[in-house]
Amino acid sequence: MSDKPEAIAIITKASDLTKFAERLAGQSVIAVDLEADSMHSYREKVCLLQFTTEAETMLVDPLALNTLEPLRPVLANPGIRKIFHAADYDIRCLYRDFSLEVDGLFDTMVASQFLGEEKIGLADVLVKYFGVELDKQYQRADWSQRPLSREMIRYAAEDTNHLHRLAELLEKRLEEKGRLSWVQEEFSLLEKVRHAEPGGALFLRFKGAGALSRRQLAILESLLQWRDGEAQRRDCPHFKVLGNKSLLQMAKATPKSLQGLVAIEGISPRIVDRYGKAMLAAIDTAKGLSEQDLPVFPRSERRVRDEEVDKRVAGLKEWRTREAERLEIDPGVLINNAVLEEIARRNPKTEGALSQVPGLKNWQREVLGDGLLRTCKAA
Image 1 (cartoon, helix red, strand yellow):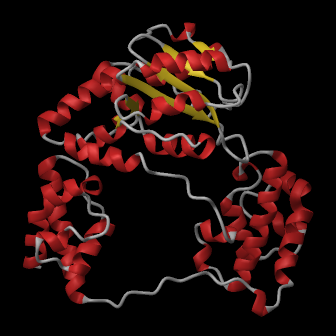
Image 2: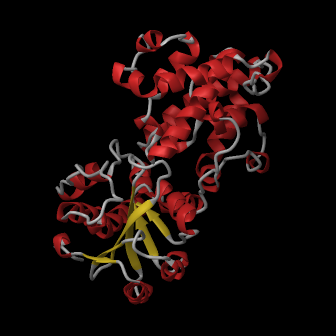
């Protein structure tokens, strides 16, 4: 593995990518990471990919290439292990931007979770096991800028440079604890995650919108539509136009003047000078809607309280706490609340009935099944 990330080459030509993909196809294990520009663009995109084999570390510049198609058979080949740390985001981005799928995943963050590590960030794990300290100053850098500085190249290469030996160490520990099959199922599920395409009103994805009146909801939606258009025009993230907290306060306070805007937390005189009239116009548009045209926040049907179900939920959570302590693993990693609540509602009496619970994984049924059934019966 390369120990000199400052010498790393960046692939910007199709012919070089094809040759590199051919070399990757001959590997049994590769480490993979990517960098995106989510902190700097309206529509985030993958700006750099990092690959480390036992022989080399290479960076791939998708912004300079028309296609990443040569990488498709490599990433989709289950016979080639792909080591990521925190793969969820990367797998979603690879599919969203290039329709690339990953098979043969090993996620060192998930492995760390199932070993009971309190700190699961890559920097924390590398310090603990190898005494390696990563420089994270470029974590929020604009990776769409070109040319990349030597420091950014070094940073990018370091994220994959240690994953081979980390995965080897973690896999050995998982085998010793009898948990390798647990994480293998988790990896298979992770390989299938995809970005959800946004749709519908913007307030549906806004925290706090459910507590607003219909008129306030209309104002919020109008402001969100204005901010979205401005962010798109400037090609920047929404928060760089105006933060969510300020938008929510405006929807509630309904300011009527530029002076009223200044009273909103997070809105400076500079912001008022730049956007004040546009924000007031958005508010006025919503205020002019008729009652029948006001949006309605969708409400899920409330479940009728069932004391027996509540009792089983409490019992299952108490059992989970004890089991998690015994296994030295986070309770939420062991089994999450949503699955426990579904088990409590269904109150399964047999292993067959337990296996029908949505969200319950095979390893959970095999390892925890007896305890879950006993706890339901005793509650």
